[in-house]
Length: 593
Image (cartoon, rainbow, N blue to C red):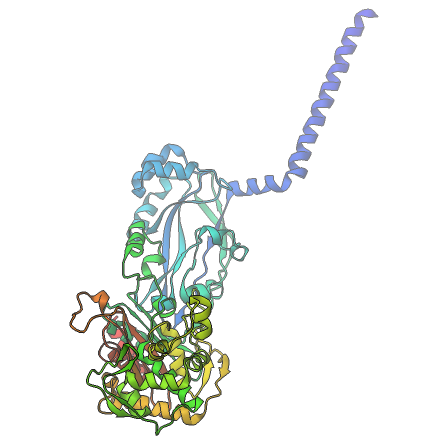
């Protein structure tokens, strides 16, 4: 009996081991199928399925005459799925794609969220490169060609600061919850209208689920959701106006803004020099980016809204309105100009050295007499002038939704006391009344000002979309008679003998406007300009047709010299382009592009 006990113990031990093994197996199955079932299922499916995102066609951007400003283009990329790729093929694949082998190795071996997520190896492939790679793709399991949607900007640098460009998510945007559904490698709007209306333009991406074999070859399509194209948008921009104005700058630095006076729609916005958004649309190279950043002419600066300059004699419009409204002058008020005004030991000169003789408000605006407006500013007081300037939107942001807008500066006695700790002097009234001194404005502010002059005192917030409901900011409490006096004089600036803005005269419509020359540095009478950077800035503000204004604008030419010769011709070209028929506009922009 004793000899049977060891056998019984062995059987019992074996039974326990079998039971334990079975329990372990059951627990492991429970762990894999219950606790980790969802995760394991995903891995299993991924082993035989490939999920491919299908980018949505981006909405098209049109100008106000339904001329397309952009077109969608395919953007091809070579990618590798690390789990399916044989690392022994890295040398051959690097040779095929013409990329550094070390870069390829780093990308393939870099830890990712999933080994089945495609890793971009080379982007921006040409059609010939795609064809060449496709012919060899079967030799490299895990290699695939991905297609994104990119942009072609039909008119290159024309309108770039308004239309904008595409780019990939930056680090800050990658953490933004509003971009959580955007793939890391996708292109989104990064500037201008492309950025402002990105969500609407972007659309909804689709998806394709494909069954693949052990080496990653596609077998069949299992499921597909069709991408939803983004919404088209129609800008208020008139590409014919934009093009004519931009071409007229001929490479000179400056800005141009045109507004529809009865709605606030932006008809054109130029910042010169500009940049080519096509360089961004497919991923800008480091060399191209460095060139843009190091360019001393600052092509990435939006001068229309981000630069502040003395408005020069264009500010005389504000001084005139303020004095008329205050009763400081009327149409019968006259001052004599002898080429300057003496005040104490100082002399405040007029641009016309020999003087303008005796003038009233009409001829003072037509001939832009400085002395008349020194006296007008003295009678009205500059605090009153500043008050009216602010009513017209000077010294504050216009609200155009492009971002980083500068507000300019409209000084007064209170500002001077707070910032300079000194009282306001009469000499400062003289110089600021003609748009020099402390006064600073932006080109878009002066366009809004001229829009309000043209429409008799209605300030609209600028909009980039055609037919957007007009956003009336305020209506100015200024008499219609004052507006008529000023507008009649502005018509004379362009159309009467001796007018400083005759270069804007057009046979297509009566143009009203005002020239401005803003001094950059003080220059002695016997000196000559030694370099462009010492030249005065040139301004011209205008509206047309005078009888029923449809366009109001401002033109600024940096170091352009005189507003009448440098800026007024640009305004003429823009006005005439706006007045063309729709067919003529299409002919204008398409023949030359």
